[in-house]
Length: 453
Ligand SMILES: [Zn+2]
Image (cartoon, rainbow, N blue to C red; front, side):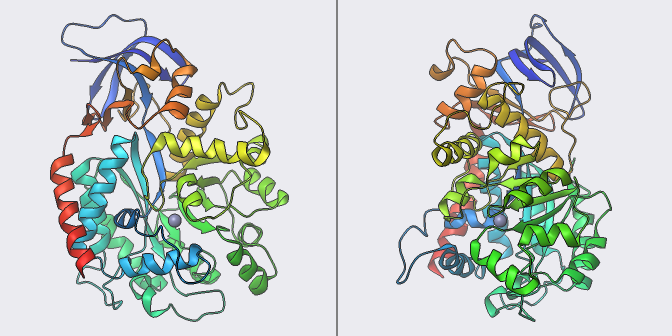
């Protein structure tokens, strides 16, 4: 039995009547201009599944709970205090339930692989669990249950600021030194090896939270080719602290002290000057943009047009998971630029197709590189991570080629995706994850007990 798409986006562009056969989670045959065979499942529009390059899945549980002002001026830092209150309550069972819900919603949104930037390692007092990787294992279990592809990025976190020697009491759960970090990643690696297509990467929380020597030392805990992720220059206070501590801006500092290359993902990189924009692009590192979260937290706007003009690579992430919506991440990325520059179709260029096509292709390529997965797309031998847009959707009527993606990115009301396959298995049908009810009730239980404590 095969899968037939009326039209599909292949690595060399849109093709009509695309028929696929799958084997072992991969595409074994692909024919273009082919009629459906008897017994084929028939779909309208086929797209490659999108990587979600940055997530803290536990934060899904506080979506909508931080939208009121505090006593003083409200900022990222007051939000972080609220987030820590949640982080310090979450048990392993609750983490697994929340992550599973976030992963269900990611698959429903067309994200087929997630980079989990995971720093909730120990119990609330900072005491190690019997298995040092207990919390990582819960993320892995949630990925297995829901079927999403996983790049696990255990996070090294050692201090509360550039001048600090230790973490704050409310950051004890995050703390590892390079030795315990190495043991934790080794333990997680064993579990991760059971998951098809899973990748183990390295993450340092930020320059403010990790001394440079420790970053160099801990980085050896994962393979030489593994992805390397770091939050950088998300907030102006962090930029100022970095200048005070090192005499350099965060991105400038990172690029001068480390061999930043295509294995690296610089998450946010919001506050960068022209020379930093050029230098990131030249390094071939990917910038991890999380437009919904960056807007929600009031971070600022990354100069994406400048960066794209010099060939910079970027992808998108759902970060705080306040809303999980792939098309909206792409839409808001473009709209932020339009509002700032008072111009339209800012991130497309004449050779990259329409704006929707440019955003989708760039985020697919950049996100794949950032997560250490091959950007195979819909091609023979490629992993069958596929998204189909809904048959006969009102906003897709009369569209073809790039106009389909433009309608998906700019007109989608979160109801256009009907089917999602990950590793060859249909995980979303008729817009709903096949385990949505069961995962949702686990999530509700976890949330009820979290909110009453
Ligand atoms: Zn983040």
